[in-house]
Image (cartoon, rainbow, N blue to C red; front, side, top):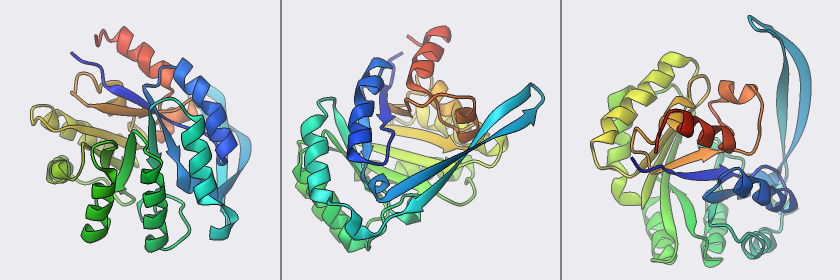
Length: 263
């Protein structure tokens, strides 16, 4: 059983914060790191409160995200700093609002950002499957053989059936070196659909990364080696609230794989 690569999404909403998170990500077991360029156009406020549960009182953290104007960021300078500072294998992403991201500009503007990112020669680039086919083909050609492509899809609506998820992943196989599919889960029933799809994909030969954001969303991450997933996304963040978000700390992920004897 081969362990998947672990990609740690860098924390922070500035170039400096992202670059400063890299050493911690590597220490916790990252094989590669993801720089989310769209987050540069945001700021955040954290509101902490106490929340009662069956296990007792726990701390609850609410994050309010504020959007910046498009001209607030010098994107080319940001990309240059990120690519020259980060030595760890790098994935660059600029997620549009339609797929849960925060990039505030038009799609043409975002395509220009992706072109600039590709020009910096990252190890990986994230290209959503719903990008206009002609524009996406151009980006793929620019990436060439030097930059691997993640063909991604993120659903902001209800979690589809297991068979629909499986079909979406299979349909996108030719669109990149790896297909990433992420769905928001409102409860564990949604999470079971994602896990069932991962079981179906295990024997398909697909190169994929499947996960949920919400309760149970981390199940497919924790059991990724047994599901033959190629890549798992994790974070340097820690806290009980991660499980409710479907996320997992990179070190905790590695420990879980050891405990479960996924070797």
